[in-house]
Structures are given as C-alpha cells and as structure tokens.
Image (cartoon, rainbow, N blue to C red; front, side, top):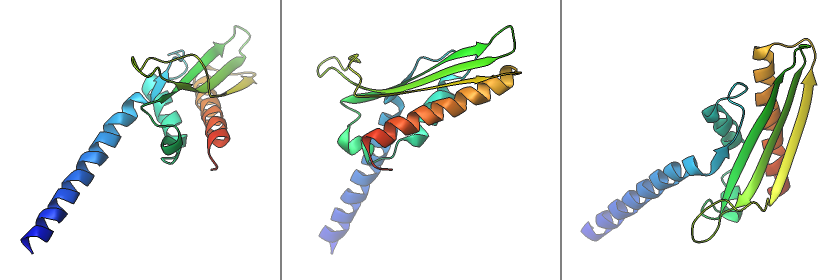
Length: 143
C-alpha cells in the first residue's frame, strides 16, 4: 500500500513538473518583429500562440523550431491603412539554438483599408496576423 502511494505521489510530482516546464517553454517559441505602433509584442505573441495546437509541437519540437511573426504598415497621409503580416516557422541551430533563416513554412497576408484611422489599423493588423498564423499552422498539421 505504501509503495502504491509513493508511486502515485512521484507520478503526480512528475506530471506537475512537466506541465510547469511545458508552460515555461512556451514563452520562447515565438519571436516577434512587428511595428510597435500597430501591435504590441505580447499581443502578437498571444495571437500566434493561440493558433498553434499542442500536437504541432510533437512534429516540430520547440527545442528545434521557433515561430517568427512580423506586422508592418500603418496609415498613409491619404488615410489608407496598409498592413502586411507574416508568420514563419524557422529551425534553430543545434548547438547555439539561434534562429537559422531557412523558413520551413511562411504565410503572408496583406490588406489596405481606405478611410482608416490608427485604431482601425491596429485591429486590421491583429486580424491579418491571425490569418497568417492560421495559414502556416494549416500547412503544417491538419486543423
């Protein structure tokens, strides 16, 4: 009986530790290089992270791959919001864990909204980033 309780306690401890490790590892899987006037870094990371299903990391482990997001654009003097959003899956170098610019998958979305302001442009940027992230994920695993 004591042996069974010890085994259950050890398994529960291992499960809690692995869940904590998995949660902490998720913070380094996404890099963002967006224009801060369009979207905040944390907001961009949350959008991309929300579109990535856990089973994707089984095929493309976080120890070997990283997602990179980028949103560029803004409102022109004529009042047109032009936005480009790109999401890429990139490998990491085996030893240094640095990003190697050899995209495994890339998706880019564009949009131009006439008669726009800064707030509408920010919303468009978030929408386009989500579209790009969904496109990359759909190309990698079945949704």
